[in-house]
Image (cartoon, rainbow, N blue to C red; front, side, top):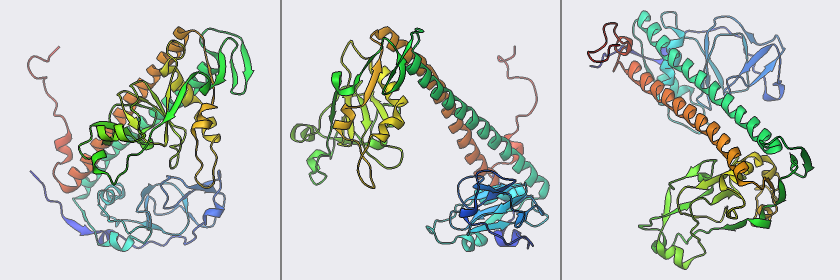
Length: 401
């Protein structure tokens, strides 16, 4: 049953503050310093400074609101306010600051783009239960959010471990061989070093005309876009084409096990690799790479290309939007052991790391879903902190022991 909290506007919950009005421009941000700079960006700490002017070290904790970005930050340490658009909020004395921070985060504040949002925020209603309940709600939410931070640190550690493993396995192998210097860097002496196109096929796909409904409506053949190429096995796609598109256009159907390399795309997309877990087609921005059977294992090459991500990206050319091409992809240098068993040992070890990473990401998503659900339910009064607590007592019959 919903417990109706009393509500007040955000503006009514605030008290006036007398704080330094100094706002450091982004040009003054440093990589290190005595005081953190808090601004409206997504980063918890945007930069550092040694300047004493503008240090806010009284009336803490405070809440920083990004007038343009709508970001919210809970700050309980001395800091300096960064660039324009950084609003500093202090709830009145009968409202727990941490509770107020979470209450603000529960609001669905409409985006005005890069326009200011504080006028909208001030009009919003937030729950105001009695202060002991505020503290309990805040601590319950903080407990889950601390769990999220721990899961994020574990995921980051595993990602770093994988980076080390990729380098060690491809630079040294698993057989203790001497190394040789190549254009890739050091690799085991007995490995083959060649251009990808010397023994692999690299082709591309196409995009059937959007104006022809026969190519898209009712389609059942998976069609991969570069946004779906992101270090994973592709088992489903957001779009499908028809048999008519496959027969009448330049689109090709590639078998499961084919590697796809993104030749261009926004941000970090260019250079990423994925593996087809199903038969599928792809657009012209993907290079479809097929390994020579009995010579190079697809899983091995998948991880090798992941290791070479930055080097592959650096091979792109063009103006503002730099791209790869099939000719460039075919000239990517690769190295591999002649022994397939050795290749499979390397890929099996990296798969184990990937499985642990995937498990960690899944746990992280569960924590985030739990937090969002709790944030909504506690702030609306759909549940109380008491509802979340497991009462002490004997285990249900049949579960004892």
